Length: 208
Image 1 (cartoon, rainbow, N blue to C red):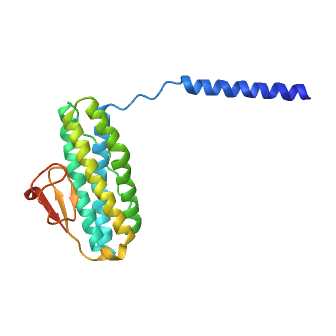
Image 2: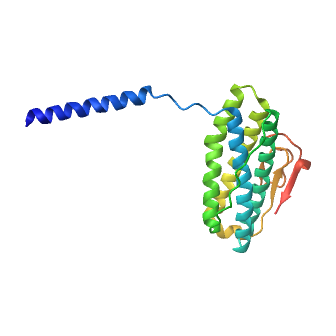
Image 3: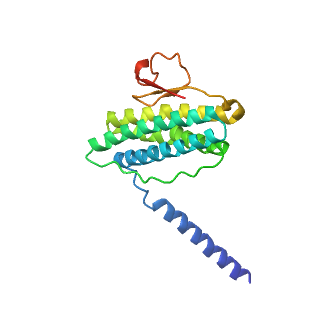
């Protein structure tokens, strides 16, 4: 009986070692190309624009006028990012492609949470990696497109977080400025120059 158990354990250990070895020698997944990263970004921004437009309608219906303005401003920003990504994609000889999904609209509180999580992912993980890839390949157009979107997504996430902390306070109407060059979004109506792309105040559109 003991010999049988010892043999079984030995076989199990060998199997485990083989599995570990297979994992170490398994070929790594190839890194996405810069074009694939641009297509991913274009698809994401296109869907985000449609989603935030739908969220704005819901917020308006629920009486959260400030949140509705925030979603409208963010939607405008995402549309600008999509357009910039599209230009870089075309410069690489490809056609921008987006799989547009019908937005799933919940309560404004839930929509804000979903939007905040998505923006944080893009600002902290996706766009930094994409920008690094573009820089490594010395594609300045792609790098600036990614970095501009990254800066805007960071601000969107901050505003979504503020709205979540004081949702009742966002029933009051609010105004935003959206840079038409890079999509930077702010509530600082006294802003003179875009902190991301240095565009003058005249290049900003007011959203409310």
